[in-house]
Image (cartoon, rainbow, N blue to C red; front, side, top):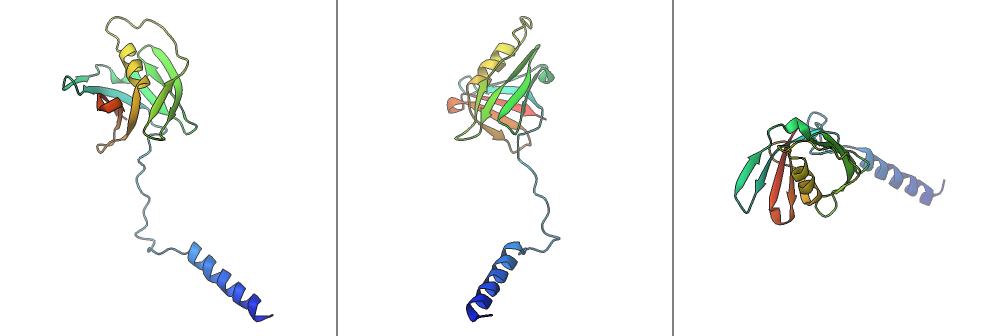
Length: 147
């Protein structure tokens, strides 16, 4: 073999060894906790309104859900109605409502407020308490969700 081929093989071996090797001992490399919002059924717990400085608690969080999927779609419940649509986490967070059922859920229902807030979301993601926070423009309304 000529010297160039040997040098090339040695360089390739060093490169592959470095690329495949680990710089940290195995006992230190633990799986990192996921901060993903995907695949979790989120329950709407409350909404904070910056203008009034008030937080309203949702009486039945299990009736107001959202589940984000890996393919950029979501499904959920708005009280007695099933909802769905698409979302994007590029440049903040946007939610586009798609087809949903349109049943009247009663005078006390928060379904219309929930849908209005969702359609105006511009930012959101995991919060420091392990929940999900979604905000409308300027942080005017902040929706808080729990698993």
